Image (cartoon, rainbow over all chains, first blue to last red):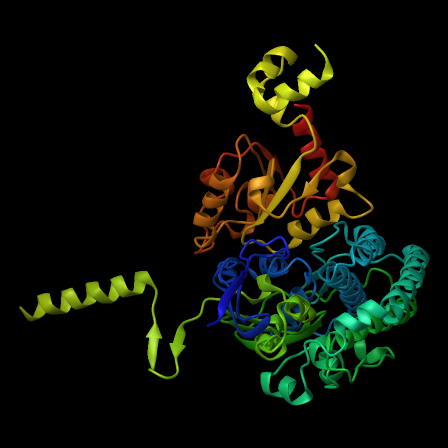
Length: 395
Length: 158
């Protein structure tokens, strides 16, 4: 006899609405089911009613935390359809914004993970040291979140050369504080005890579930779009893909903390590279977008973001498909949570840094055993109406 | 009137105290530390993280005695952000009905105030003020933590 423990949908542990049902036998989790849809906004459909310039603001609001990775992937996609090569300065700016976002997202995750473990000091510290990064965003783009920097063929705003010393100064500060955080997390015996051997995802699990991002890299699967299919300024700078062999929650924390150093190094190299380019040369003018289709992807802080757009020569997309990293990462809960105690389930859930507002989509449920479509109330009504009409015709 | 009698009345005869201290009922309820409950609708997470940001050291809303609580039954203020979709609507109503009255409802962000960019979506079920009464609107996409703080403090001094 298993008991069901619900987490959510509006739970103080989570900032987003989603419902987990843990089927427990005593303290041990036997099965897990999750229910989403509380966050569905119909973005793919909305996108078809927006012009390409407006769609950037829409895809930015798919997710607030990774609000650059979606426009990044969409911009890559649109550049491919329009067939433009963007100027070097725009490439550098795109990479800088992308990497700054990675730093702030990983700091956010470290804080939340600390909060889930009962380490509120880590939560407060990490969020305190995240503030300078947001200040940097405000200085460069004018907003703390939702930066509105991307457009087809380049970026909207330039980063002036006189801002570089200030950016480097803030990055140095963040680096120092990351050292402190890394030290605090890596040396703490309690964090070791709580996270080592918890939420294990082996290399085979990762490959069979198709997980991406830091979740995969923590299990020694070196997958990173920035290296595998280079875009923006990533081929022009030196950096390496961080992997860990631990497969557990601790390894995921390790990967994220070390990735922040790589991000800081990438930004510094980008700033040096930008000095060689002409100030103000930030976009290639695109007059019209031809008919066709294109794909674009970008490495978000959580993994690969994938956008697919079909155009017909007008200024509206005909079809816009989004695939967010959490969509594949969430499925690994089945492996990482089952067989553990409830106390470890929360940190295992948090370890993949799930983002439900990216993931929400409309889907038909299909039962593999009975070959039945699972329908909602409206569809059953529709079917019933159709049957009545058919009978009426026959009479 | 000595202090101990005042405490006695605080607990057992609120209306007597209200008369004695010349306070309105609402004023009396929101006189001390406010407890906040956060309801995230179908949002993009930006407002959620800015609300959490208010609790962290730079903005530190706890110096005004405010605190996020786990259940709406303990709350004085209900923060609602994000557009409300069809699945959220009955749950928002239920949470509002569970809340102890009087409660201050604050709609945060462009989506909370009007539906924002998602108002044309096929799952949109109306902005917050069409579903439950709203006391304050904090616009912005997302509003800065300073704006959220300013809004709530303004409500307090009203």
